[in-house]
Length: 132
Image 1 (cartoon, rainbow, N blue to C red):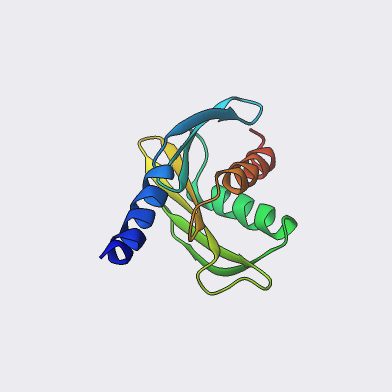
Image 2: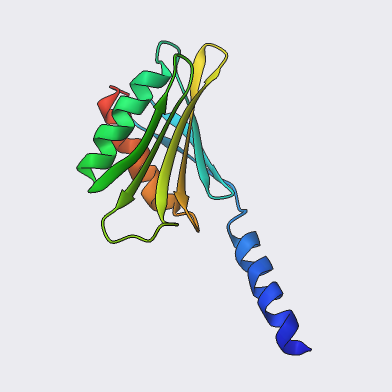
């Protein structure tokens, strides 16, 4: 009985540990980025498009040693998926850009467990490429 409860309890503790929300400013223009539930989220100033974010994400990921495995882009939205060499099928970085009024919302997820430091480093690289 105790063994049956151990695994679910461990899963709950791990899930709750990733729930803590942290906020920090990034880039030269102090872009606010929130980390919550394994995803880093930031809003870019007006004037940027999803395609700009996709290009910056692809370049930054390549510089960081990732291989882009999927890229989907439209006028309004963009999604980039990338993996490091030697990673499993489940290990990947996903960058999404979606409209949010006149601004663009960027979401970065490092899967499967979420890695805030890696996501923030990637965002910093992207912001430099975007001039932010």
